[in-house]
Image (cartoon, rainbow, N blue to C red; front, side):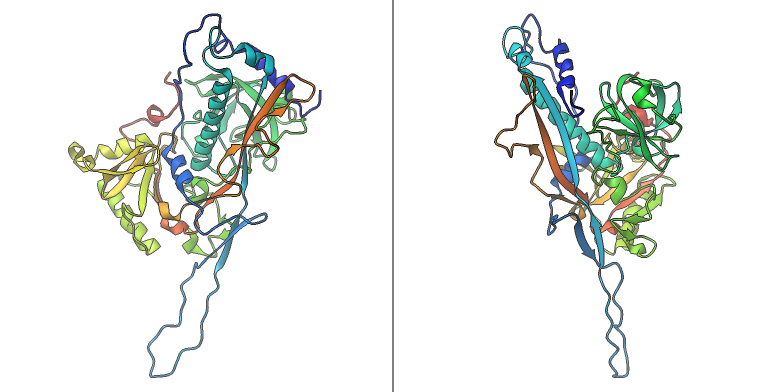
Length: 441
């Protein structure tokens, strides 16, 4: 069997007893779903005047003030000019892929003996998986970090921490049994060191179990602070093995960089151009007074309007709940703000729209200029690949077919200083895990 073959992946289709059944019992119930206001903001963000040409998206920004205006005794000042600074980023490639045995598909046709239409369910699950990817990309970074390793229990068992790589954020939001993951060895030049399929998750202890040690730890051993990322296949020797590490699109942890991890963003050095930085401030009291002052400080630093017509605040539910406790009788929350795509209703606090996103970091309040977020598509919105006449491709030497969804895009902001992050928010009265989209235990 060729290393790139998907035939082996079809074995799981024969075990879909939840979809192929002896007695027809109606449709499959969608008890889990993944929706995110942050992801919606990025999907709504248009391309503006930007387009991707060739290998990179290049934009230009004035990051210093022009000089020369002055009062004199009549003599004119010398000519003075400033040059714009070029920023750049590269498009990302997003995929999700599925295959099916044609015989199994026919057995599972809608009607007696099936819970709904098997192929339709596979399409739904595929788009849900794609939506989950869009969520973690919008919230996280282009490194594709899902979480970090806390400790190694054995050659196939480990404990995780720090969702998206952000300290103390719940780590299991984007990990599920059956997912294929890899790990990045931070002590070996950030090389991808192994891969495996998740076979079990213990939510009470943040413990993850993967498949055989031969692919998970083929060389070095997993260690604390190594990164967990998505991977194409658990066999690292396969010709199509690739991890998502450094292959994901930019998210808020790139654009606003709440942890101040990056000194250079979009090829522009913050040390050379300090006005390229978003406004980041550590929280001290986190109450109505602090957030009100924060918005005014952002207005001063960006020298641009900051209000409900230009900005929106995004935070995890725990952050909003913590702030709500400082508002007497919730009086400040009685006024509703804008309604966003997907039906998200903002609450107006301190004359600013707040929306809750439980996929977000647990101790950060973002203030985002929605008119300065851009998402540029190279080939239109995400869709099935069908350029050879059909969205289906026949599997070589097997009675089955496959298909995949692809998207070539990138997200960025050319006015980063119009965004802000209030960081290190103390959750004295609530627990972040209670507001995280992970199972209760």
